[in-house]
Image (cartoon, rainbow, N blue to C red; front, side):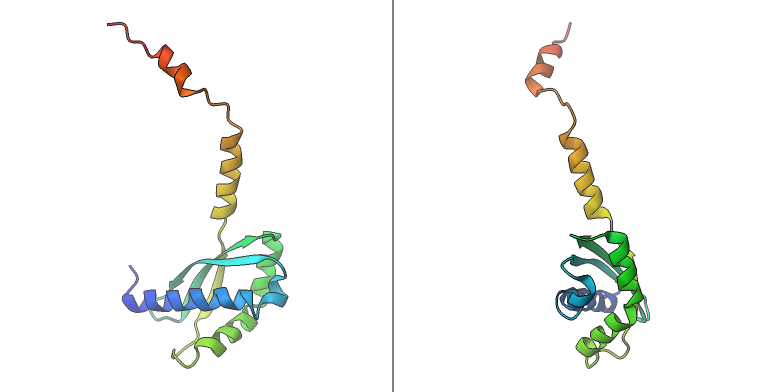
Length: 128
C-alpha cells in the first residue's frame, strides 16, 4: 500500500504531467489528448509508474514517441517541481487501454439483440 508521501507525490506528478502534455509537450503529442490516468510512486520516490490514455491518436505510435522523449518530459517535470522535491523520479510509462476497451465494449453491447423485459414477463408464469 502506498504511504501518504507516495500518494502526495503521485498526485503532484499526475497533475504536472497532465499540464506538460497540454503545454510544453504539445509539439510531441500534436492534437492528441493525453490523459495521465494513474501514477504510482516507488517507496523511495525515485521511480514513477505512469499510466497514459490517448484520444485522437495512433496509440502505439504516440506511446513510442513519448517513450523516445522521456528525458525531455522528465526535464519539463524537473522545471516544474524541482524546487519542491529532492529528486526528479525516473519516468516509466504504460499504455492504459481501459478507455479504448470500454468504448469497444459499449459498441459490442449496443449491437446485442436484447429482448424487451415485457416479452420476458409473459414467459415467466410459474406452474404451481
